[in-house]
Length: 152
Image (cartoon, rainbow, N blue to C red; front, side, top):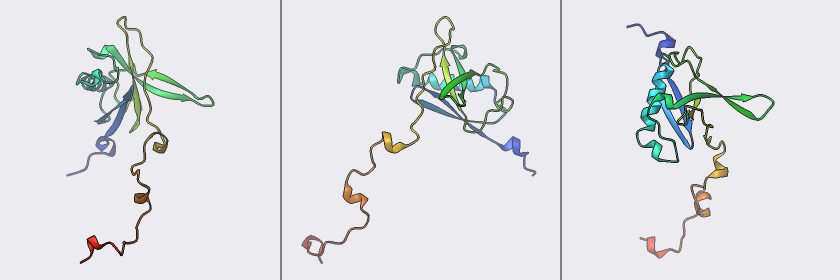
């Protein structure tokens, strides 16, 4: 049986981020933005909206998916709305492991500010060490010779 062409076999992992939450989607390149928005809606309505102050959404018109673009030379980010909902991931040239952001809309349909916290790059700054005991981090220790409790 012949293998499908390389482009047909590829699976994309798309990350969708809002607040402190990141959703992971595994989709083929033929996936439309509309279908991806439907999957995001399903995830948001599975109880996720109750956490972290994420707004409640009822349909895919209540939010947009946006692509982040960093302006070179300036330390600024801009977000481009993915408006072509019938376009596929391949057609709009999303890359594997690309991060998209959710931009919610208010009751009048006006876009709200994107609220998303990117995870820290260096975990040492924000997290506690795995081992708090300094003895554990020293590696091998010498056996205690005068301990009668373990002698035979």
